Image (cartoon, rainbow, N blue to C red; front, side, top):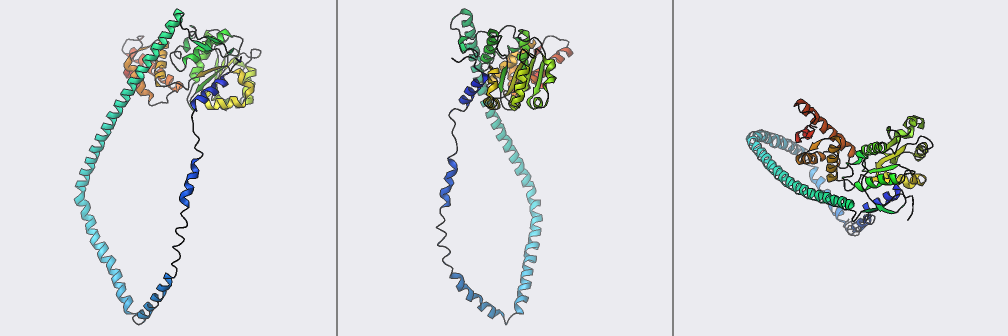
Length: 413
């Protein structure tokens, strides 16, 4: 097994799974060539050209007949042409157009009312059908979530009993090691350890860092396109300080485009802390090389945390192999779904000392429909507002400190 594996290899494996079985639509544009071939059919049609020659003599006798009666023809035709449009079209149509809206106005209103009632009825039926489908899907998700929680509980019990210990590959040595549990001092990461799609990455990374303290602690956090994962980086940085993996609690956050424009002398006060780079796939390679050198233990000794979209980071590492080995640990947030977001809410409420019943989480599922699934930054910001509403309500009721989130708190947030 190859030692010193890195996050780039893990990203490539994820991409190969995501796009496995794809088909290329390159062969389709050649099909419309066949309908353009029926061109020989219209060629025999232009052959009957002698026909217009026969019509030409018919035009000659007409001027002969019209030559003597030149004066009577325009006199008869002019009044007829002028009289027909003036008498028939305007005079007959004007009274009809005025009379029609007067008679049909009431029926049009009635028809419109009937149409509105029918459309409302159809909308209600469609809404009821959609509500039923959503309830069924929600029931399935709940059942799946319960089964996942039961499996997690079984794994934990088995681990405690020393039976069937789950083993994973250490990203540094490539050896099979027990997954273990999240370190108790990593309190800010506990809410992620309850998410089935993300928990293994979080637990494995923290335990591996503890086993190999002399190796690079830099982390890559993968999210969906345009979705924020900076809060995840902040939670890792706080946990690093709690576990004494870094010397300072200072956290600097910067976007890739801003980092490209500044000098590294502005990062001198970050010594011993953590630097979070947002949209890291857009950072200039030479700038990131400078940052890594600047973050080395011999220089300013801080941890670099990259956050960004999976495709852009995969391209970045592929084009810059010289810095691949500096990023060993990969956290996949892009895999999170609705049930994972609800698990995150449970863990976050518990972390902040708040409690909530099942109806609150059902209301949170409805709130998730108005935001992007997997946008951790936006969802955690929303949960902060919910807890603020709860705190203000309890203070106004004289029940401060109870910290029980209600459904109305979620609606007002």
